[in-house]
Amino acid sequence: PCLWRVFMSDRKMRKPPTFPKDEIPREDFLLSTLDAAQLLAVSPLTLKNWRYRPRPYGGPAYLRIGRAVRYRLADVRRFMERYRVEF
Image (cartoon, one colour):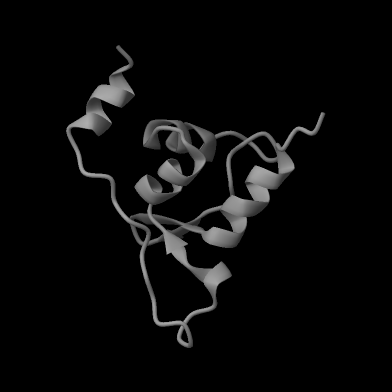
């Protein structure tokens, strides 16, 4: 079996962060690497590898706040739209 599926089957799926509606615009939500990976249906290791690839071939844009890596929801959505395939 896929190692990622075995790993995720032992863990509870995390829910995206929730904020009061008036406090933070929806597109400015900050996602952790695990949250962004779940949204993109890839492993967190894949996102880590994408961070080291040069643009435009890498993954979504990210923020580094100290040692923490965060992804804006708008950037993750833009990344998904960039690779959308229409038939």
